[in-house]
Structure formats: structure tokens, C-alpha cells
Image (cartoon, rainbow, N blue to C red):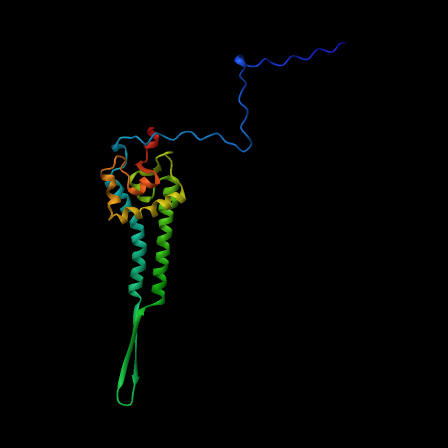
Length: 203
């Protein structure tokens, strides 16, 4: 019995083109391009009035937290007097101030308020695009490059950059009234825009 000759290798694809090599180990395909949100008409961005309402809603929990701490502090104000008797007369000596409990509660309220801001504006807005107030108003903050939420760190940084809006006598917060993308100065620095929550579904 004779050996059968092995079959020849398959011919190369037409034109001499071969399939591209597989990606290197650990490599990944480039992400798909984000939605085109840089050249939307002005009315596609969130109006200034809606952003103000969202900010007021976000401020409500913080106001309650700090208000409770302040009320406890005020109700903890106390005074104590002692009478010092001298050979010729008696002198009343009084001391007053806030109690340790009141000061402790106020400090804890301040810490709770800070944690709320980090959670609301940092984690929540950074991961899903909307703080509590923006969720109520059905708007979101996203990167104008990717159309996606900007993440925890960048969202916290964006809130800090809002100081730029303040140092120009608050005018930075008024920019959305006339800006083509209705951005504040902080939005321009961080390359973010505020859009309706369902905008991505329409793209």
C-alpha cells in the first residue's frame, strides 16, 4: 500500500492579501467613537433655568443636614454661675458657651454634609451622569468628547473648578444664558456639557 501525497496548502486570498495578524497579547480594540455632541443646536443643551432647579434640589439635603447640626448647637448653649463670697461682699461669676455635645453634633453634621457632596456630585454624577437634582430634572453631565459620564475623580475636580465661576463675581454661572453650548466656565475647562437624560437614546 503506497502513501498518499499530502494535500497542498490552500492558495492565498485574491490579490495576495492576507488576513491581518491578531492583536498583541493584552491589547484591546480601540473604543468606538462617541456621539457627535460638539455641534448640536443650542436648544439641545440643558437650559440655564433647569440647571438652577437641579442645583437647588441638590442643596436641599445639605441644608437639612447642616440645619439639624446648627439647631442642636444652639439648643446646647448653656451658662453656669458661681458666687464667690468675700469678707465685704459676694461676687457672682458666670461662664457660658456651647456644650461639647452640641459642638460634636455640628462637626459630625459638617462631615456628613461633605460626604453627601462627594457621593452626590462625585460618585453619582461621575458614574451615571446625574446628581440627585439632575435626576429629578432629567438631565445629565457628560464629556463632550465621548458623550459619557466623566468618572468620580473628574466629577469632583469639576466641582472644584466651579470656583472659577465664582471668582469672576459669579458671572461664570451665567454663561449658559448666552453660550452656544450653554456651558459654564467650569464646563468649558473640563469639556463637559449638560444634556437631557434621554439624549443618548436619540443619537
